[in-house]
Image (cartoon, rainbow, N blue to C red; front, top):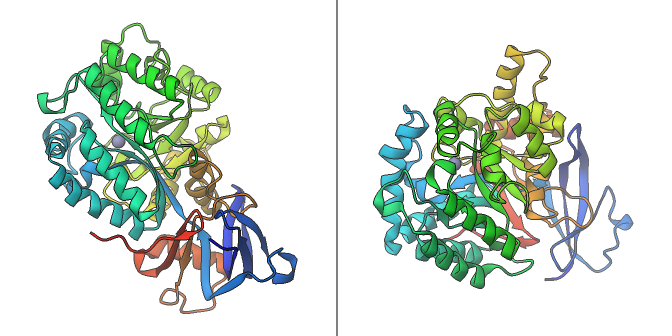
Amino acid sequence: MKKKVYKAHILYTKEQSHFEVLENGYIAVDADGRVMGVAADLSSLDCANAEVTDFGDSLLIPAMNDLHVHAPQYRNQGIAMDLELLPWLQNYTFPEEMKYADSGYAERMYRRFVHDLWRFGTMRACVFATIHTDSTRLLMQLFQEVGMGALVGKVAMNRNCPEGLSESVEEMIQGSAALIAEYNKAGALVRPIVTPRFVPSCTSEMLRACGELAAKYQLPVQSHLSENMDEIAMVAALEPDSTCYGDAYDRYGLFGQTPTVMAHCVWTEGEELELMKRRGVMVAHCPTSNLNLASGLAPVRTFIEAGIPVGLGSDISGGHDLNIFRMMVYAIQVSKMCYQQNHDRKFLSLSEAFWIATKSAGSFFGRVGSFEPGYEFDALVINDSDLNHDHYSLLHRLERYIYLGDDRQIVHRFCRGQEITEPTI
Ligand SMILES: [Zn+2]
């Protein structure tokens, strides 16, 4: 790859409090796909002889990151939205995930899933697959072929689930080791992530084995935490020695000993909040899922004030929407409901929601989510001419795109400096 320069209206959030806005600005990207600098004029960038691509009146912004999504639930998107977590798992989610024992079925569905992440401008994702090693490998291959970044987890589970979705600890270790040997390469865009489904699905032996894998290979960890009151009660009964749900992961080395992201955290408070803060555990806030499954309103302002890192997750198919821009809108709306309940918890501003979705979430993948020097150039070019029918400011144009736009306005997508073209279904 050669050095590149792009010209457009550039918007991004270095800090959560405000946007950086460059009207007709330039951004230089080096041969490794990293941002060299952003400037109002070309002469102040060190890029003599570099090719300049002019995107005209379009907006250039960091690409989206999805910190929590279940690839094998893609077919269930928009189905069974009238249930709570535990019956929804038993009646819809588990039966669908069992089909991924068939690699042919997995390929058909996973191609569609990867295509649609691309469609909505999500260039990095933390993804749950299933227990099935072959179809998990297939999903990793698909991401790699397309050139998008993903941490993909073969799911570990061996209790409170149907026979067809239960794997012995030995089988989990063997399957995971095979994927780790193939995909755990430093600097690779697609890597494995240790993925115990959640405490109710994993015996102590399974949780211990997951913690050992994370420590041995220095792999990140993803799971679910404090989503629903019945689930929390179930964890307290299954792991009676643990002092809180988070502690039930922590005692097995699955809570920040390596980079960790926990989905939901709707009911996290007190000791669990302190533990997350101490361990630097990241929250994947999934507002649509929390509304659909009647889980509750996650206290995002509390996390931000505690210095706990937060990103956004679509949580397909508890969530029905894969579009992370729309997730910003839901996150703002949920924060307004929290504010309505307690005026000490100020609701999210647009720049905060954007920063959460880009720079904050991106930090889980490395230097991703901003246009500061050294950041990987993950970017979207938005041609909002159909939404820009009057003299809107650049910030209002971005806000209108976030609230009103969709995939039709995204005209180019970049991941680590490389333009990502439409994947085949
Ligand atoms: Zn989930």
